[in-house]
Amino acid sequence: MERPLLRAEIREGTGKGIARKLRENGLVPAIFYGPRSQTIPLTVDPKELSSTLQTEAGGNVLIDLEIRKGDQSERKVVMVKELQFDHLQKRLLHTDFYEVAMDVMVTVEVPIHLVGKPEGTKMGGVLEQIRRVIEIQCLPGDIPKSIDVDVSALKIGDSIHVNDIHVEKAKILSDTNFTIATVVPPVVEEKKVEEVAAEVAEGAEVKEKEEKE
Image 1 (cartoon, helix red, strand yellow):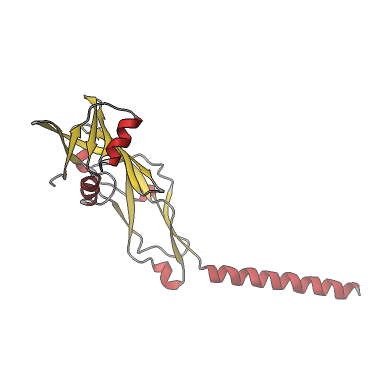
Image 2: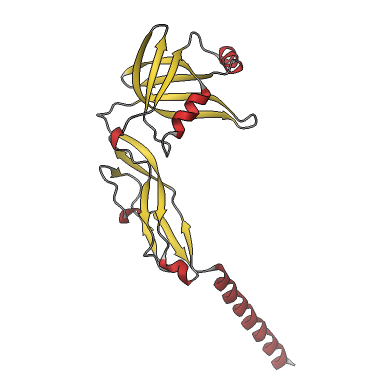
């Protein structure tokens, strides 16, 4: 699959003052780093970055980062390691790009996508997703956008655990005993049980008073 392309410019100088001026000019300060490369301060267009990330589902997008300085440029395969936001002003403040070697295993968290309608929900049960991501280790080119987990066979009281699933070309690192999803009894039924228990307790109290009288 072709990787999305993002352009970045090498910036001169670092510090809060320079970063503030860059943001005032509609740019986002960024940094590129990795085990095989030196750290490079960059600037990116926030609109281009947002568009690049939206071209792929999930948060483990591999990007061809074109690093420019004047007429010279070079490309690096990267992942977005961190995005810093000003949530009050709803703007991106900074981003980190981590260089990825395509022949070296990486550890990432991949979202879990539940597929199907459980049998238990047809009988009034409620599907609950306990775990929404799973940690795996694989080559960068084998990172899945998401992991589909079929829950259609689950009945009330049934669960699916990490050890019930398989991820192609990847090793699962998360604890295999963790529950991914389960179908619980309907809340209405639970309330009825509580109401019946309360009525029984109340009846017992009344009978006890009558016997004392």
